[in-house]
Length: 179
Ligand code: ADP
Image 1 (spheres, helix red, strand yellow):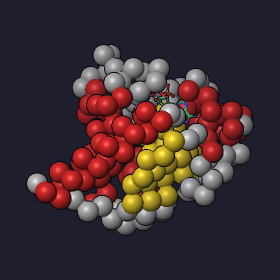
Image 2 (cartoon, rainbow, N blue to C red):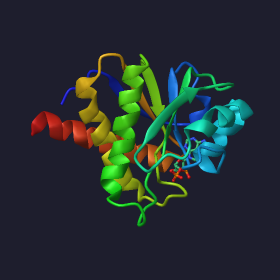
Image 3 (cartoon, rainbow, N blue to C red):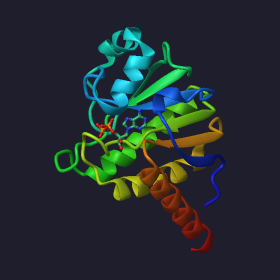
């Protein structure tokens, strides 16, 4: 499948994605500051983000909501609650829902560039290789209906996760092209 937008995988910090219209937060149900991605995003955004989030909470696994980005170098934050591995079922469908709903919101808000972290693979315990395959396959599939989005980036915290995502993406693209 040829996606209408470019997908890239880079090593970096989701809270430092200058030049991107929106970043995705690996949120908790209460949409408040936490560890990992939610910690980095809320610390950089400042307390105004948690305040804007309060009336939108709680959210359920697979859901996505959108807010402003406050002190982050972006226009929007899309907050997704990934499944807790081994608890929220069916985990694969709920994880895919997060990515699909985030892309739907991006399209609604005219977002042209969107950066994702690897949802659910930190505190929520989702195995990285399986999560990468679901994330990338879902984004590739969702791209069919996209008219606004031109660039999607996966931001991984370390070199190993970045390589894994690059290989998974290459495999999925090869599989699509060659059946
Ligand atoms: P979850 O609760 O959904 O599992 P976490 O924030 O605990 O989310 O972790 C999700 C993934 O994001 C993990 O793979 C973790 O290594 C990675 N991560 C943590 N901090 C950052 C950051 N600042 N930027 C990008 N990725 C991050």
